[in-house]
Length: 96
Image (cartoon, rainbow, N blue to C red; front, side, top):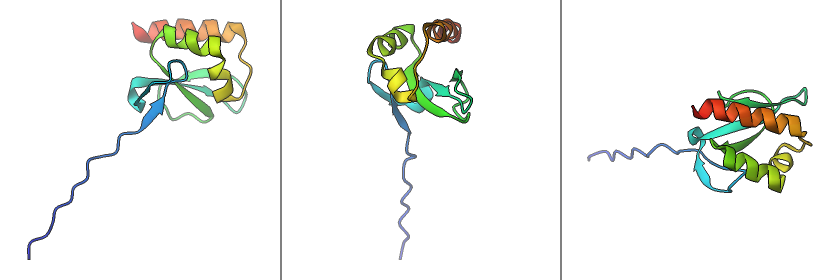
């Protein structure tokens, strides 16, 4: 009897952008984390410790998340304006 070769396609992790709400592959999004020390940073590796939220690699999505306070809800933290400005600068650097 012949064996059945059931090779499953690899499951691609999907995440939802906190800005626009669109579901995309994890590698297409940027992860923003709240570290155990309560600092908010961009995690380019996607493996740092902390509570994470995903956002599209565009400042427009970051602005939407800021307006809706969806990033604050996802990270369960109040994010000051200075942090948003730093995140915007870093997103601009990543996009280049």
